[in-house]
Amino acid sequence: MVRGQIPTPRVVLYKAEGCHLCERARAKLLELRDELGFELAEIAIDGDAELESRYRELIPVVEIDGERICTYYVQPEPFRRKLAAAQTAAKTPGL
Image 1 (cartoon, rainbow, N blue to C red):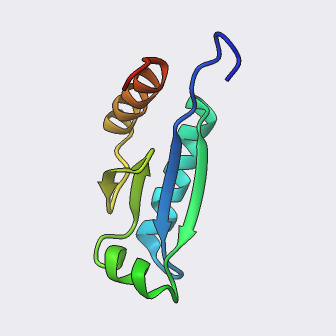
Image 2 (tube, rainbow, N blue to C red):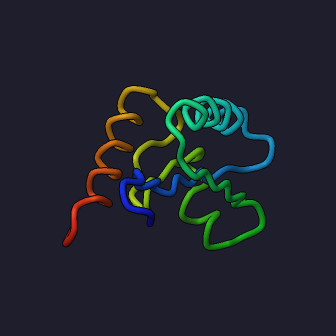
């Protein structure tokens, strides 16, 4: 990381084909990404038995740096707080 650069936590959206809640969550995350600048990975659970088992009843699922932060809906204010906390943790050595 370049000195002075703000850490960019990795945000993951677990989704499935034909899931209208997943599409809404993706749209909200894209808006927030434009505003806040973070990496967004989208992972389709379709056809993966392990991911289907873990996420099917909860999708969409959003994680920040591996921590589940929301299911079903992305609420902007709690998302902003969790992202800020992840950025702070990334800047603090030993955390």
